[in-house]
Amino acid sequence: MDGNWTQARARGERAVRGKSLAPHALPAVISRVEKTEPRPEAPARLLSLDALRGLCAGIVFLSHWHLWSDFTPVGAVEVALRHTGEWLHDSLSLLTWPTGGHHPAVLGFFVLSGFCIHYPFARRALAGEPPPPWRDYFGRRFRRIMPVYWAATALGLVFVAAEALRPTSSPLLRLHATGSLEDIVVRVTAMAGLYPREIFAGNYILTTVTVEIFMYAAYPLIYAYAARGRWITLGSAFLALHVLAITLLRFFTPYWIFNSVFMLGIFWYAGALAAHLYLTARRRVAGSWVLLVWAGFLGLKTLPHFTGLNLLKQGAWGLVCMLGILWIVDRERRSPCTVGSPPVVFLGHVGAASYSLYAMHTPAIMLATWTLLQFGVHRYALQLVATLAASLCATALAYETLERRYYRSVAAVTPPPR
Image (cartoon, rainbow, N blue to C red; front, side):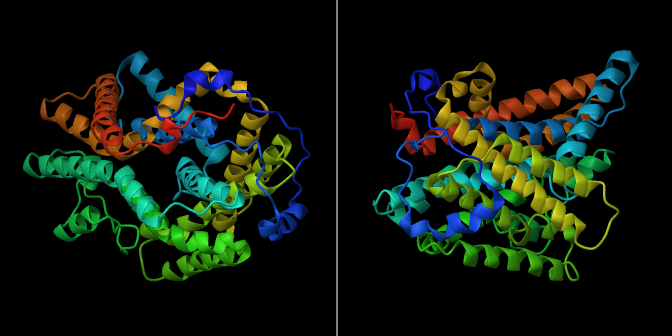
């Protein structure tokens, strides 16, 4: 794991009390960008973000593990397992799922990504330090993303070849094995987030990773505006992309639009803005505000459908994620010992390998199911075990041989502040 979790309890950060951040205070806070000094207690590393990353990756994986384990359960035990999975999935959908097109944890990932990318740059800028050379930034982002991305692409294509050579009767496998030569080229070149076509090619979920890649590429421009306090301009630009997405729905499949930069960029912006507010706002976000916005989100889900309701629900859930991150990192700042609790430590370990888990689990699940069908196995319990084992093995292999070899977080070699 990148973080120094074993030292978390020993951190001696000074606890600071504050007041709740009211909505009417946001414009004033944003307008004081160039006049505000960074919080002196803002650490270089926020360990709770690793736990959040692990939570999001775990939820995405568990959702797919349940949904794609589609053999018919036989017997009381298998039926109980299936019903338990359905209950958990339905509960998650009720409490967090904004629309049929966006997984709530994926939206959380984008908010978290914006926070994590902008936080160290904003922290340096507010301390009067220049940003690192952009060449170094792009090199680190490339090593962070592309080795695992290409490995996940290759594993997906192995599944496509397997299904093509020895086809099964599974509609799910046939769907995920869909892919023309053009689709494969777009997948390998990481252009799926901008290419107006729904692409499976053995690893459908990598489309959202390509949107992340686009945001990383665009970040120097985003930083140039953020450094000048042009947050309203940036927000207007991402809102315009959202409006453009609505127009594009007339011409392109919504399955691509929902997973493109046009829809997802604004959540990344929300995370970057949250990092700025954490460093500059003197008032903290209270947990009650997170719950209040969450309640508003649930209220929107009960309304009869009207044009624009889905966008409102997505925006409300994005705000829940944004305020939730601000509340969690402020709690870590005020009570550093919380990051040493066993659940947070466990999620932190998951978070360290979260990208490999996210990128590799789809083709691993499909290949495990394909293998079972080739041997004539249709037991639901065996499918659960096989798909879980395949996903964990693929994740561990990618993490140990690629992530830890080609990328090492700067924070991993930086001792935590005392």
